[in-house]
Image (tube, rainbow, N blue to C red; front, side, top):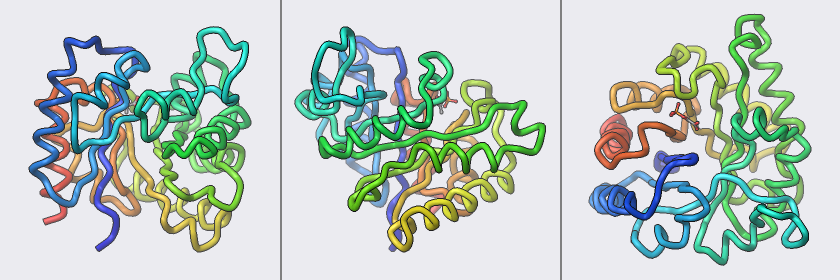
Length: 251
Ligand code: PEP
């Protein structure tokens, strides 16, 4: 069987220790399900406590610095994430690209720093609404991948790419299933061009307003190997419903 679907919740700047109860409930639900891989990316401050609170799900971070240590006030490095108990990190999320000026070159450096520390990576790409409307979506995403995919022998080990149209994040709008499939096929082609045969093993996740009602259909689209979920990952009730939909869509 191919890889099980990978369903990852991005808590963004949400969550204090009071919300660990949600993570525990998600973990209990995930432990009862087969053939699905579940993970949460809480804020830095919760990584260690969440890792201690759960058994089965993966725990990761939402960003890392390009350097392992140094005079970078307020930043967190990939080795620090490992030390805190993280197993992966999201890099290149559109909110970081837009609000923190992260370029493709910075995203690539972060991905390579994460890989050097042994972390899994979820590398985000996606077009804006204006880019979609002007017919440039595939060109934009292909260019982002060309500039930000990690290089090196082990580059595809533990690498996932998340296609997240910026206009679908937090808006309740999703692309058509045909558009999702077409973009995921284009990403697969770019991965093959970059990595050869190993590019076939990289999971491609869809992200942007995934919920329990649309998850099964989105996950059934061509080359979609999982979902990156923002708002609907904040409660066990809504996130678990997506995980269940991901499993039932495969039966
Ligand atoms: C995200 O920002 O990664 C995301 C997918 O958000 P949402 O599910 O809330 O659209």
